[in-house]
Amino acid sequence: MFVKIYQYYVQPDKVEEFLSLQEKVSEIYSKSLNFHTMYINSKEDETKWIEITRYKDEIEYVKSMTFINEKKEIQELFARFQSMLLTDKNGISEEDFIEKKDICNL
Image 1 (cartoon, helix red, strand yellow):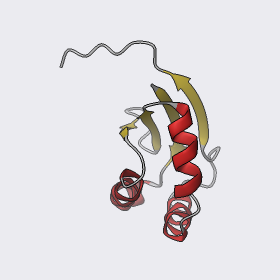
Image 2 (cartoon, helix red, strand yellow):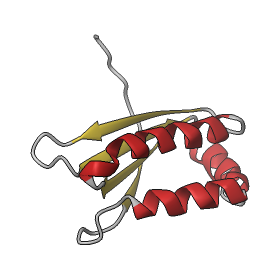
Image 3 (cartoon, rainbow, N blue to C red):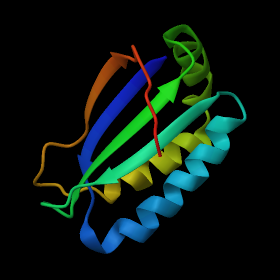
Image 4 (spheres, helix red, strand yellow):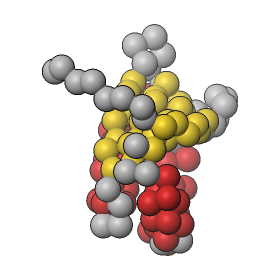
């Protein structure tokens, strides 16, 4: 599995709008890409969010994202997302990972 991890800071009064926007983005992405995304909110800093998304592999991710990101609607949603971020924090950090093992006992 290919994994993308993003970290960013959302304005506290924009959280519901942020989560709603992420649902819209997921609907668009799901038409072209298989993925699983989890949003995690820090207990110590309510503005800090981590987004973890798993994809089948990096090749599928790159191919699909190139196509998806050309869509005007995605560009508009991304601009709205950026407007929800705290301007005094470090913006959006992004890292790539390869999942080696998945153990789940929920």
